[in-house]
Length: 236
Image 1 (cartoon, rainbow, N blue to C red):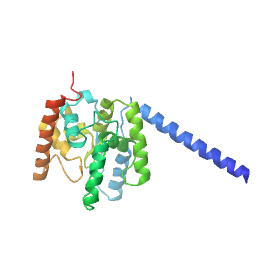
Image 2: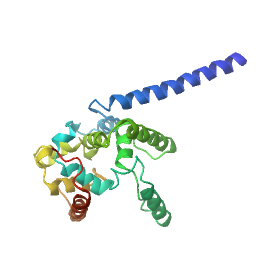
Image 3: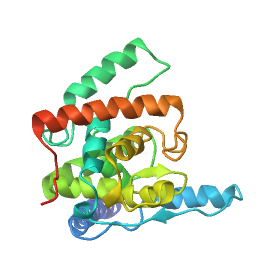
């Protein structure tokens, strides 16, 4: 009995070592390497095959310096206005969302930062379980410690789902606007950012009146951020 217990402890110990070692190594590697595929891409491909749909996977990695600076500005304005100042978690937004969700159980307000979304996109799968949320917090902490804000934004803008089978700013720019991301106008970047709460429902290629309203709100936020804080990630 003692030998079984001892062996079990050894197995658990090596599983823990393997988990931390492999995850830290992956985060270090992706500090330098492009993220060509994400778990969500494979999940969506599986869904397309299961439903007998056309296989769609449009993804083109480009460095942040080759994108228009309006693209990161737009997602900061839309998704995470304290991105450059927080350390992965916006506790003010979390408190606000929790208060709002207690008052309205039907329409849940999220508070995920760009760092959290990047951790989820690159290393995890969609879901709301406590295990998934715990792993998201773990990977968010790792990338905030090991990556620069510029690198987090670069990976985010290259991996985020931006349409049906479309991933990243370059792919959506080419597919919806027939332009490279470097040539997108300010309004086009705001329109793309406006789809991010649900890019499979809302389209930057054929925006509804609701989308136009969101785009205009994001443009006002972009103008405010640029005026008071300057343009983040401006190309030299």
